[in-house]
Image (cartoon, rainbow, N blue to C red; front, side):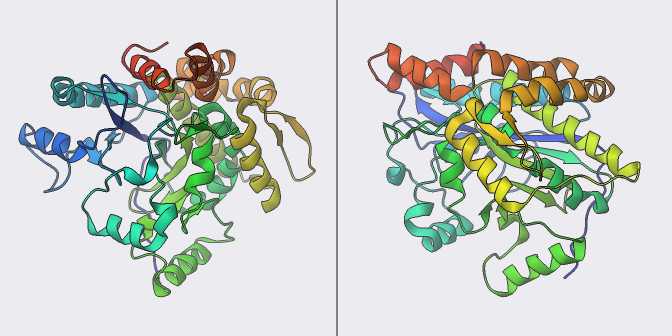
Length: 382
């Protein structure tokens, strides 16, 4: 099979931000996503199609909406579009007594009691995956970056895989599951990979090998369309992008901008490396798998494997001493220096999982306080 790779200008951006809909008083999830979307469409002069608003989409669960940007040239532009999406949604949800909340998971919701959006593809997913599929009360942030050329897609994918633990640790915000502290910084990371086409991507020697893999999955009924491949990072042929999907949900627009900047800068750096005729280093698959687990378990305290030789370093030290300084010239060229610098803010104050545990401890382990705190963060920032 041939998978076309659309033209997408180099290092352009697209961001997707999944948000939970919660009751303003109780912090419980409320399944009003369909009504929110219907209300938005009725006020939008040019709906994209019968099912979707151009910048706000439905997701698997009715307690979720997803904000999406168009093709952006800068992180600031992406943040402006997301901010506009927040205003648009709140114009509908505020009168309903519904608030917006974002973390990798809702801390106390009962996963199997959450209604699923009435679409055939979602019904098929739940029917196939059963108990695991019914657990997917999770929220994430996805960042697309344009590549300019198909031949860069798989090498850039391999490069981003080396930074999985960094993204996982910075975004980790799902320590609680169904009211219990799991002991992990990111329960979402372990939960989502239980779906049959989710988790770490494979390594492919060529685009043709990737096409063969997709064809095999279509032939054997694993997927019906290639968008059902839900790897933590994946090429998206129809958009001409590489998509980073490993991150837990982020509580503030500032944090979304920081993660978008880090993604954009790394992809731009990889593009330059390839343009200059160099190769992007890779690690053995078991190193990659171990890194993902360590970051999910320990978050910003994870000691991660850096290379095929097995060198290790605390993930925050590696970010500060090697990654952020190295990427600063790239960030200046892309106009996202301020957003890249916001990564340091996440490191200093701690990722979402730390704040959630602190808020819970300060409120006698009442997890409603965690949700209320998240609601205020999304409205007002830190």
